[in-house]
Length: 427
Ligand code: PLP
Image 1: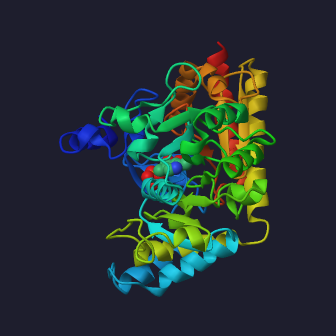
Image 2 (image 1 turned 180 degrees about the vertical axis):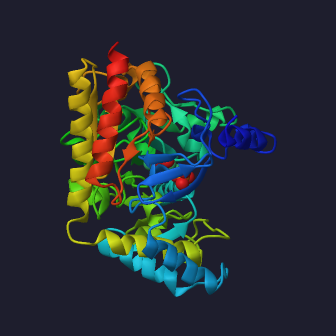
């Protein structure tokens, strides 16, 4: 019996499902979660002492790798000064200024403690300033778990959303309209029918919760134009893409100015931080200057701000994103070539420091393409790699992440391990 198994059994006796976020339970791939003990650079070490090359990166935040020395030092220094004050600190302003320098459209920010809080606040603000209730999201898009966003497409086009979870009122889900990612016409059709009731369109600018699907040319331009035409706000949910696909996020990469931006993950450098930001005129509608309610005991926590600031500062190193993209390309090209050598139908997507692997012929542009990929093959691939010391996200529907700590040798070792697994898959 492994130490990891024992740890899981013990956790199950006291934690719902044994995990504190469901994807960690390995339900998507079968088997049991691996309990981790420590991380160092590109590696995770489990409680049985096994080492893994990590492509999860704590689900996105760890763009510098595990336990980066500058980040952990900043955290220790901040902690030594006090863990929380519940009063403003200058670290909040420092981090906000750093974010605004990278994303100039975020004239004002409000820090929260998770991506979920950020999207929830963005929606409330959008509804408040437009006086409208409906929001458009995309099938396969994930924005955390505000009730209004735990919604998928109803059957047939132009239907109102249906809850994806018990406990989400159908009446609330009816205010959420669900469109098809990369199909601006589907958004146009929703606006044609409900245009005067739509407060906002919320989109992951690179879809990262249905594996990894980049936008097709012109998609975001059409969203921007539709929102302008109908007086709705465009919300870029950059919780995943912010500082991941480029220093300035997807909005810089694609040259689109959203009305509101939500951030999370990297902005906290591994500690719990989220943010919502946008033009002063919009953001000043939040309490205390405006009427829209938003608050948080842990918001702007000084230790979390220090982790975020230390992380963002390092992203400005010359060539940071070029190197990251090169590593991602070496990985995706290497994996594709290895799969081809073994006759395994396989394709990849990549933007900046994020990537997607699909057991399907490409291209993968739409939610239906993602769903067509062979999830059973992914499961076998996942477990094969895990056994060889490579840790992928335990789900066929999650993006993968490379960090600045991944070396060319780590990438080659990963491709070599994958080659072995592909040879078994083709048999
Ligand atoms: N938005 C996006 C695009 C995400 O990927 C996530 C989490 O994965 C969230 C929002 C929710 O963030 P959190 O898990 O911090 O609540």
